[in-house]
Amino acid sequence: MSLNKKILCGAIVGVTGGLLLNVLGPKNPAFSPIIYTCEILGKGIFINLLKMIIIPLVFTSIVVGIANLRAHAQMDRVWKCSLIYFLSTTALAILLGMIVVNIFKPGIGLEVAMFQESMTNFGMETLSLSAFTKKFIFNLFVNPFQAMATGQILPTIIFAIFLGIALIMIGGEKAQLILKLLNEFFDLIMIIVGWVMQLLPFGLMALLMEMFATQDPSLLKALGKFMFVVIGATLFHGIVTLPVVLRVITKVSPKSFFKCMQDALVTAFSTSSSSATLPITLRCVKNNLKVNKDVAGFVLPLGATINMDGTALYEAVAAIFVANLMGIELNLVQQLVVFFTAMVAAIGAPGIPSAGLVTMMMVLQSVGLPVEAVAILIPIDRLLDAIRTTVNVEGDAIGSMVVQKFTSPPPIAYTHRDE
Image 1 (cartoon, rainbow, N blue to C red):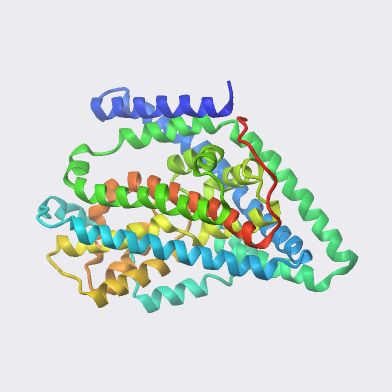
Image 2: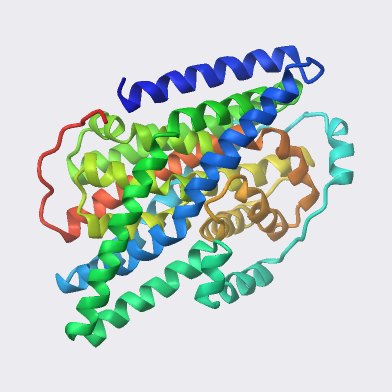
């Protein structure tokens, strides 16, 4: 059986089992042991294995990518194209979300009393825009060994960029020796990635089963309209906006793209982590979409950290939803503040599950909304996080193709191949 078929079977078993457990409820004797097993298999083994290889994969791919791209006089163009693409698609996502939420106005008339207990018990550090910006910048430049040891992606990328540029500047045989060593290390990491991928169907099954088993149907029903707006806008961005960009710029069929990227998109949905999905995204983009390995190695790790279309859309919609819930009408200036703050917050959000909940407090506070309202979204965030992460990963992959279009020779013709 091919890997794709195994993934499909794992997804079906996970969703079916999770819904059944949800119906049976936590009081059923089988509920706790099954959830415990799913946590060990899904988070304890599969997710941790992905986390184990993230730092060495990101570090080596960025350094090697920069050095090789500069050798072909492409680095400047790749930087510019990447940033222009990331900022443009993020702005489009936020604009779409704010238009939709202002049309449907979710939150008006929703009973807030049912959330009072969770809001009372909820507590987390809150940051102003200036404090958040200061903390964000301070966290960019840290001890690289400390950053790698603690799994900080963005500082690792910053150091890798510096090292890659330094290799370019020093040149000569020494630089070539170090670059060759990093290339070989990168190849070794990709072999380990292949081993980890053999566990993907089982990890996916466990993660989906746990997710669908632990959702509270009554809360999902109460927040249905908000979920409809977020999911609808996010899917529209992922199914219409981004594919149009792909088709217009690269001339690649969206159908072929989705077929080539299905492994990465399914993994993104199940893990809710664009960083954890990065190894699969790299494999799909390079092997199936035939994107130059240097372009993919530079754009994808950077995109997994700062290109968060789905997260930005969600945070903007959630801020206006909370305002509606509290009976506060945001004027145009306040909504512009939400627009720009959501963009900054999405760039600063790490590619881990539910990271948007933390940075979203900055968005709420920027327009004077109570940060405690984040507690309202906690029960439904896992499902929404899965969908927005899938769109984030899709945007990263399309970004690598767009960047290659403007910076490299046309890729060779490709067809999708089942693993």
